[in-house]
Image (cartoon, rainbow, N blue to C red; front, side):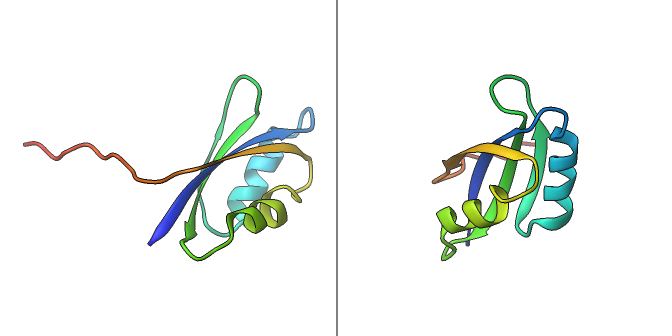
Length: 86
């Protein structure tokens, strides 16, 4: 089983695309990264093993990337998926 987490990322000015590319290319467990408008520049989704420490993962694997200024992590519980209809 995996745990989905979402990490909003604020980047240094002018570096959002570089940070997104770095995460996609170099961070294990990344599912997708979106550019966003508003308070944060990026939204990254990670699928982590259930036994992995989320705090350690975010602080060691995301916050330490070059040009990352701040993060905000959302931990998920149960997904709600659309029912399959014909």
